[in-house]
Picture 1 (cartoon, rainbow, N blue to C red):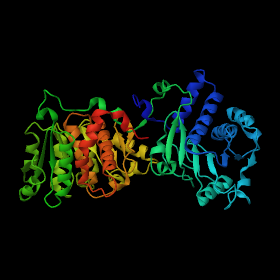
Picture 2 (picture 1 turned 180 degrees about the vertical axis):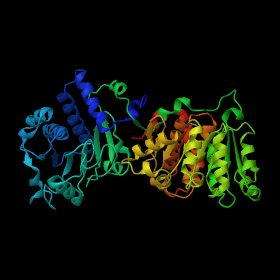
Picture 3 (picture 1 turned 120 degrees about the vertical axis):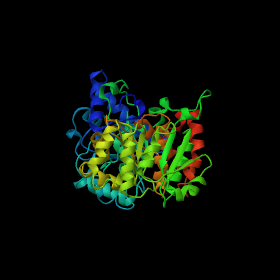
Picture 4 (picture 1 turned 60 degrees about the vertical axis):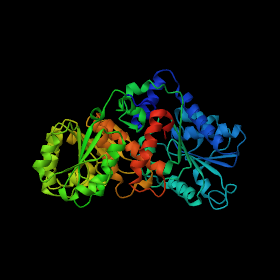
Length: 511
């Protein structure tokens, strides 16, 4: 992704191209491998004191990195045992050179399964395992002796340092191919891969350190990565902060469609829109619910409406700039009409929950209306809703591929929610949000996210940037609250997040 810089996520193919471009630019492959292995060794030394070490080397470049790390650590006085899937002479290219520079014995991988190896009590008690079997490019499930060794490491519960990714993690999708150890530390090179931030791969990586191995950052301009890890650097430049010479109408006017029975969802969304800086936030609700919404916050503008026609007329009044439909609205024919009216208006639109479910029997009607909104629309489905709305795209492999295909199909920004929320733009850009804690799996959390998105859209942030910023703020607020979180806490946590974001955004980086 152009401009992603240190936050770019490189697919397996893109990382291979980065290596090739660096080599073509005059950096020998052997130098890159030496730097990678030395980086792994340095990361280990920063975290652990010398202890028995078992280095497991696979047949390719990942194994070559393991040979380098083993040599550097042995030279530093660590007791190192190295086991390989093949004899030293079976390696090729830079990996062969790394294997030849390792002066210690090379045991067959099968040896660590024998008595005195990974069996309980073997290898000097509880060794540190360096997993250099397979990197991010693994394309098939682990099998044979590699699978047996990984399962033995898992069974023993040994501490693991993974080289590039834990073996068995697909670098592009984060899927687990057969089995994968639970790493305490993963050391990768140049840039993260999608598999480091996508679930379940992210759960296997432990702490991730990115090592500079000498690939110039300029290669990103030739690669143009398809994805990035969500970070304020990607959207903060366009942040619609308050101005001394400004007024509330310059900070946007959001309208939220409120339900008559489930009022909590729209109230949470409205509070989030207010807290994120929207100048005015209104709730259009059934007359019988007016008092309930009026008590949610004194700053809310509560507008009683009856029927889709009255709601449509409301869209064109009061300098409104964005509208949210769905939270707590109920799946009714009237909601369908309201959604179509919103998409036909000049306002930016967020469609959440019921606003999409209302079109379950007529998805193409929704898609055509969304396309006509010319990139002003944000859809926020979770996986179940996504599968119902996009059954063809849901069959694609990998969350990035699914979200990108859906965004391209409807011409809208798609926020595919989850622990690894993927935000995809119709133009192909993708960011993965990875700061959300599991505490967010609670009622009303998604309504707050939708409110953040509409609040930022109302202030003029483009749809893709508004969705990415909303997801990041949502996760950061949840981290501030911590255990015991309920959705009502999230809007209250936003002032602290926004204060720190304004004061020193770089220190909020989380990789």
